[in-house]
Image 1 (cartoon, rainbow, N blue to C red):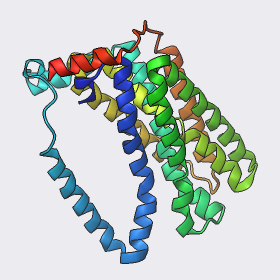
Image 2 (cartoon, rainbow, N blue to C red):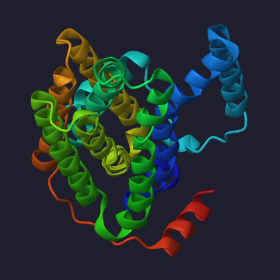
Image 3 (tube, one colour):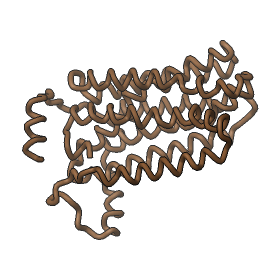
Length: 291
């Protein structure tokens, strides 16, 4: 829907606003879930999910269709699935998908590894885990806000490179700290915060960049990007469990490798493109005419 209504850096700006909610919501989960468990028991968690699901279904009926009828696909489902392979042959698209996908691998490793690292290894009280886990929300909100303000001046590709560089550096520091047990709990919490925080520069810009080159196939690209991101995310969390050795080291190394992979994709597979300066009045006019 963002791609239907906006283009280029303006799309990345709007995606930052959208990703603020999408990135914060999963991080709020442990905090909200812990409070529901403490106040009403575990069954209440599932009734809460029922309510959320019904509210989401009701919200769907309030959303207008943003894709003009002339741009809607009419091809058979088999052909549509086959064209995913065609998309995977585009180097730039692979770069955007890889940058976001590897980062999601690190994020899922963070989600899978911090309960053990904080509660079991460093003896953080379970009731305080959600608060410590959720500190990354502050960083995510800050970078999403910064991205929405900077993307029209600096370009989404440059901010993507900055974000992946910061994530890779934080991941390396985390791996070293976990390996030598440097800094104790703070030695893990600080680099984890610095790894999670660039979400605002990485996720929104990687998705907007992937969609920019294929405006006529935005739905397929969006689906493919989502599948890659969560697919690599599953691998990231599985590796933390598979290499568990009673220390935070596996989590540290998985996150470090994910950050490096994200940086390499952004640096090597996403060549610089000529950026047309954003003109707010032009975008508003185009959106009005389209409506």
